[in-house]
Length: 85
Image (cartoon, rainbow, N blue to C red; front, side, top):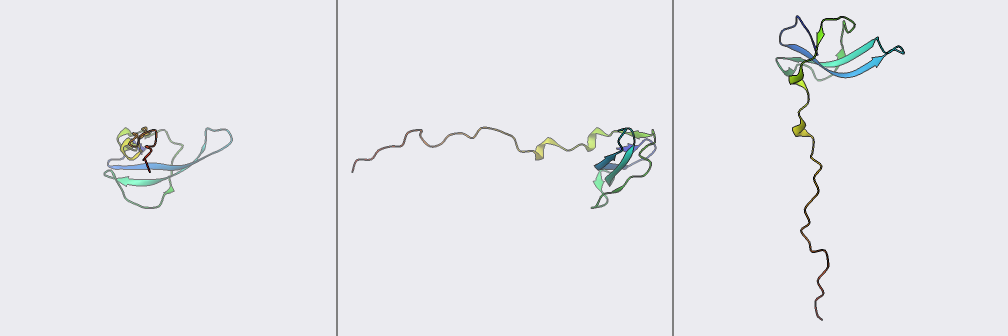
């Protein structure tokens, strides 16, 4: 998320605390400058109630880091072999 008049600065939202009405609240996030994190710890974002915020889809988390849920291939035979003694 970034304000529409910011250039090269954005926030990755880490925590949202909404009030009971669901229309107001507070937000915390990690600031990013030119696409890379500028801080390690999240900080409170000021001006979250204002209208000038916009969503930046290029900063969304990539799906490459999520492991795929594939069924492992079977390498051992289903029935054990009996060896003569």
